[in-house]
Length: 203
Image 1 (cartoon, one colour):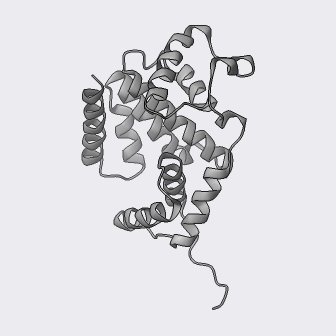
Image 2: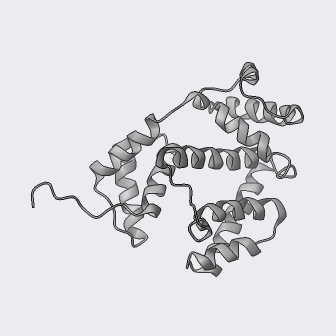
Image 3: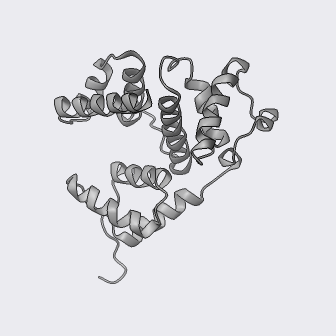
C-alpha cells in the first residue's frame, strides 16, 4: 500500500546504528550499507539504507555545548576533580597527537572513570570514556533510559565490560549475557580476547 511504513526498528538495531554513527567517520551511505549487512548477519530485520541514513544524520547532528573540543579553559564552566587533571591532560595529549581531539563530554567521562581504571593504559581509559560518552548522547536523544531493572541489561552489559576490564572478574558479564539470552561461552571468550588484544597493543 502507498505510504505504508516498514516494520518498526527494534531497540537493539536502533542502538547499533546510532552507536556506529558516532564511532565511525565514514559517509552516511557507506556506513548504512555496511550496517545493513551487519544487522542481517545477526539475524535481525534491517531498515532500508534511506532510513538508516536519516538516523545516522540525526544522531551526528544532535550536538550540544558538551560536544565542543575540550581545553583547560573549559574547566571554568565544566569542572572535574582536581586530582583527575593529570590523567585528563595525559589523555588529551595522546588523543590530540592522534588527531582525535577530545570533547568536553568525553573528558568528563575520563575524569569519572580514571580512578576505577587507574591500572589500565591511557588508551583503554579513553576507549571506555568514549563508549560512555556515546551512550550518554544516544540516551539523551532517544530519551530511552530504562525505568525498570528488566530493561537495563544493555546498559549493564557495558558496565560489566568496564568491571571486567578493571578487575578481571567476568561474573557480571556472564550474568548479563545469560539474561540477554546470548551464547555465553562464545561471547565472553570474544570479549576477553578483544580486551586482552587491546591491552597488548597498548603496552
